[in-house]
Structures are given as structure tokens and as C-alpha cells.
Length: 168
Image 1: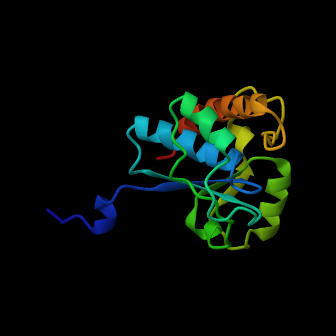
Image 2: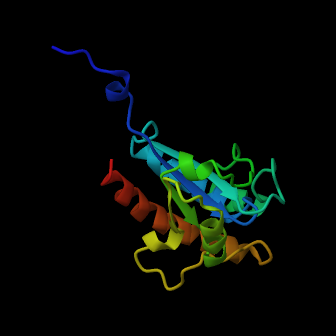
Image 3: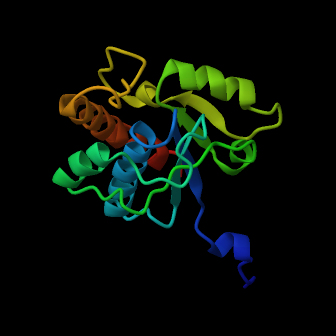
């Protein structure tokens, strides 16, 4: 009988990065919601999750208080998340980078190195009934915008998780 090598013993990890503009509304909400569903599915050791912004406006800051409050109402915890800016190394670290809107997707495609391993797609590509390609930015709107964004993210997260599970 042969002894298992460390790579055979360690869980296979699939890494997902959510990206919006400043990493304080949409992408940290997606990170927190998706992490919640991944852990509930018993896949916390198999799927790595993070978020980042295309711009460095809010580096080190917690998510917008309105995002945090809306998420908390539904049992999602965003308190440990801190904003960061996407880095070129992320294209080599993550398997899937999901842009929250088409502007972010364009920015990511410009930044993506030719030898990157990450697939770069729109988050709503995984929404079963999306009528738009973009998760709207709730930052300058009222509370209803944060509710709408959370609804979109929850629905999309379930489908995204099913897609990733089929690949593990």
C-alpha cells in the first residue's frame, strides 16, 4: 500500500473573488452571503472566498453600514470583511473572479495578465432569471437599493454554489 502524498490528503480548494468598485457594498455582501452558504453546505474547507475593489478608495474600511445592517437582518455577518484593492496576483490565486457589473468586468479584463489562471465573469451570469447584467450600485440610493442587491446576491449565490459543487 502506498502512502498518500500531502496533495492527496489536503482538500481541493476552489477560490472565488467578488469585485465591485470600492469593496464596501456589493462585493463584500456577495462575499459574506456566499461564505454563509458555503459553510452551511459543509464546504468551508474546500472553497476559498474573498472580495476586492477595482479602486482603492476604501482600503481597510468595513463594509458600508447599510450593507451590514441589511445583511444582518437575514443572518449574514459582514463584520470581519475589510476593503482591499484587487491585485495582479489575484488572477493567479483565484479560480474565478466575478465582477458585479460590466464596468468592473472591463476593468478586470484590462488588468488580467495573459498567463492568469482565473476565469473572469459577471456575477449575474449565475443568476437563473437575471434581467440585467449588472448588480446595481446601492451606495447613492436609499435602503431599498441595499435590499434589492441582497436579494440578487442571495439568489445568485445559490446557483453559483451549485455550479462550483459540480466542479469539485
